[in-house]
Length: 200
Image (cartoon, rainbow, N blue to C red; front, top):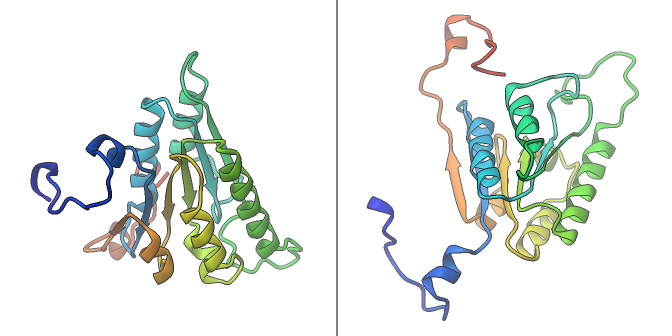
């Protein structure tokens, strides 16, 4: 697709302008770094376009204060700018079993998905970031068929980006844009841990 030129033009009766305004479902998957970072870059563009932005994080702790959250929340408070709403689902890093924890991560993920369904039905946002949402689907906490059908049938021109490793094939099939991040090299390979300003 050099210089933004399409390879084929579908015979769907739509004008170029109508096709350009269709809602996009994007999936950022793979084992490389940058899936969420790219999604938040898209959210910045959405905010600049004047679209309300809803962020739903599924496995990052509500105690974390990541740079993207601070920046996007600050943008959401700019007078005359589009609102930004940030939601964190559950304790975070839910695959770690903590002694004494009574939280039901599966139930929290299911409620998070139920809230997204309500927001999609109400057309609450123009752009949704469902960060690390592939994991609740992979673990069976959220029904993949329900996710795919809901996203296919969403009203209006609501754009959605989903991040996380091991995206389900049915989700990939429903998506308009799929990017796989492939790790070639990472500082952790040399024993270096995450850094502020790089990972959060």
